[in-house]
Length: 499
Image 1: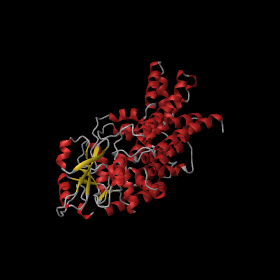
Image 2: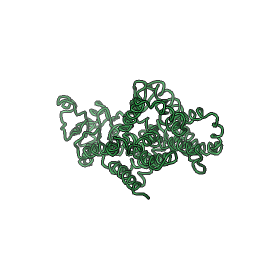
Image 3: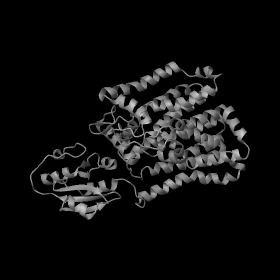
């Protein structure tokens, strides 16, 4: 093992370990992370490994269960914490880093593989998603495994890669559904179309019959069981999530949140954000090559080199697919980044003779350093974070036996639901008033918006007092009154008088 390889490995390890450590320091911030974390917590608590539950009694039909399986299993092994829920995404990212290294080494050299891995690991979205409770890391792992296996098999590799192609499909289909087929089908189909003379020969290199059968045996049973257990799942997930959401940016059928209505083509801007800082470097390098009269050379390489052509198609496939969609998020770019990173890594590896040589180290450190500083500031309270961890913890430490559950007026944040272990409730103003009169509890704990004026707080109850506040809410205590009992339901359907 060379000295250069040891230095590269050390740098890569430092980057991955920095994210590993930060996973335990940063609280879950609304909305995505605590929402998925609560679904995984409920899975681990109930032992229901078929249907993910949005909340008790409400099935979550928005995503397949692979990421929730991994997170719930991590809870079972490591206990419930931010770290245990984020750990599976870190492992998925580690797998993608290795796949990037493996493909780049196959196509070019160890040096290109090293730089490709560093570029991928230090892109903004890669680094963030490596320690986040999301489904995207698992989708990207599946699509990357399929596309890397395809490229290696087309390059002459045999053996296990022929079957790993289908394993990637299984991971994708169980993490985000048919979208995995689209994101892998686009680059493979276009590449085969451009290589039409050899396409038949290439396709024979994969065990389609056996691989498809294994894929179906591993994927279909869950889809069938999910539909049988909660009828309506297939219609919502296949038709709603994959067709209606794509065609209608303001899709009113969303059961779990609001649509993300963006201008069409916004996905290309998201690519710049997700690939920061390397996407900007790539565009600057491409512009420099074109302006210096190397346009024909660049086009010739992209068209004539099968490896470059496949990487380019794999890198742009998510943007091509989502260009006409208005309902997009920047996390949709993640499946593009492994292949973008290899293209950029090949370019960066040749910078030893370039004035940009000294810039490379700073670019590698930019995203990890910036995010680590942010996490450190958030952990010490210097940076505001939309999380209810502190408020819930304060309530849990100070509540007494005859006190009410923690209640949020009109809107229950997902982080409050997660950190309370599902005990926090959403209540309406009328429900709170009735509960106060019912006198079931010695004191009522209720969180109201922080920006409420003193008059608004006084109108809620004359017997309340504020005991703490965070960035979004102020926590009030309302002393009980002895006036009999009534039945009250919170907005989430929980009968408060049954508590």
